[in-house]
Figure 1 (cartoon, one colour):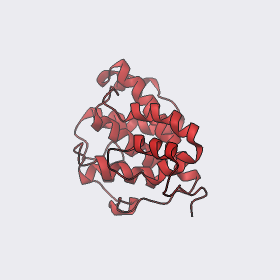
Figure 2 (figure 1 turned 45 degrees about the horizontal axis):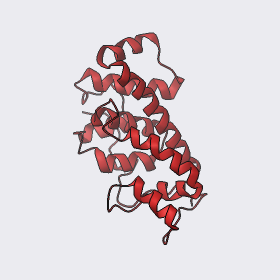
Figure 3 (figure 1 turned 90 degrees about the horizontal axis):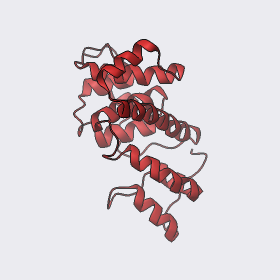
Length: 191
């Protein structure tokens, strides 16, 4: 059971407006957003930053973004946000089943990762999760494939999805219907 229940319709006009702004046109609001609007000033403030993180203004490609988000959420054991992102974006950004499995249960040395860029993104998400920092060797690898704006976006994106994961896990948010679960991707060696 969720510790804070998501709002259910009918919504007050200001809440309905905020929820509409948080979703693609015509899509019903996610449980997470319906919970955020219980604190409408917070949800409104989050809209600006969250909108940036998921927009074309982010200097990272959509694929880079999803590799980082999926890995960060998996490392935070946030099945809710991981599942939403895998369901909505994994196919769109060309993540294979083996890569989704690796992001969830494996690491950057799995054979499904052909590109150094993908491997270093995974290593960065792991380092930030484990140590809240990036050592000099990893920074050198990152700087070899990412621009300064991309480096800054990477750091903030991982931090943002730690915050989202902490919130979803902390409130005991129920999983969305129809999205994958950690158990849906096989465990073990990743080919």
